[in-house]
Image 1 (cartoon, rainbow, N blue to C red):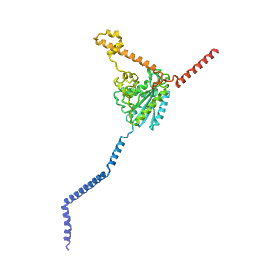
Image 2 (cartoon, rainbow, N blue to C red; image 1 turned 45 degrees about the horizontal axis):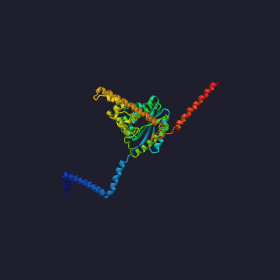
Image 3 (cartoon, rainbow, N blue to C red; image 1 turned 60 degrees about the vertical axis):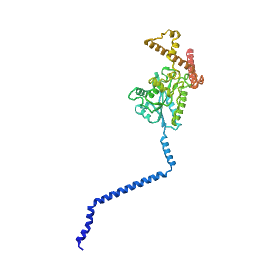
Image 4 (cartoon, helix red, strand yellow; image 1 turned 120 degrees about the horizontal axis):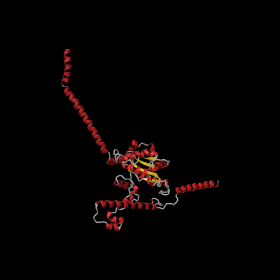
Length: 384
């Protein structure tokens, strides 16, 4: 056989394949595309069959279970107790409150305001879901204690600084208990009132009304500052339990006697453009506002009212209004004083309190013992 013929027969198929290589490439591409499409169809059909095989009831159960897990939320992640103390009373109250909160299986942190930087950390409480409790004492001349001095100064400046705004602490939840002595009436619990007011002005949410402890055992609502704190602590723990469950206790319907509930404070403060003196607002909430025409005769007297002309100048009207407001303020002050004396011997529930409480007995005993010692000393000096 001729070798040249064998070479020609071998090269001719290769040449043919080379000439038709485009069609070969096209065939490979089509085959791969078909294989990919087949795989996609198979997977889609398998997924559909799997979904159809799941019973509808089970699918609903899974959906409802997923929704319930999504809706289940932690309403209170913990409690932070801040205290500012001079003699250690507020610190002791913080420890007692922490023990009560621990019984609810909630994490508790006790923080000295002296070691706390509000500029860096207070904003964290907006999203932390913590409840912040402030136990602050009023010291000399209505000033905060040394440990709470910087915190109160920063809070006051932030409350009036437009750069912070009214929503700076929106989302933060807090409660305040103030320690003071009603013997200093002009400064009684001034620091507690201010801290409560400034936090509210920055948009924080008050979970319950402010508590006030009174060192004066005679005027204290429960006989001593310790008893005042125990009564407030009981209400706070009850409110905290409701918050844990996602509940919010219904505020009063406008008939509270003290005007310290959440709705009254916020509504009254908005009307007064930021004023936060809660104890002076209950007359406006509970008493109907008397019209000027009906009260003028009573406040000026019948003869004075009859002598007024039917047409009054604008300048005279301004003087009359000022006089009416002055008389009304004096009347409210007299009613407050009379109410204070009427309720002097009663607790919050209206029950008659014992004339001699344990704290008062202890204070009187100390005074008697001191007087006896002074008398003995004077007698000894006279005889010698």
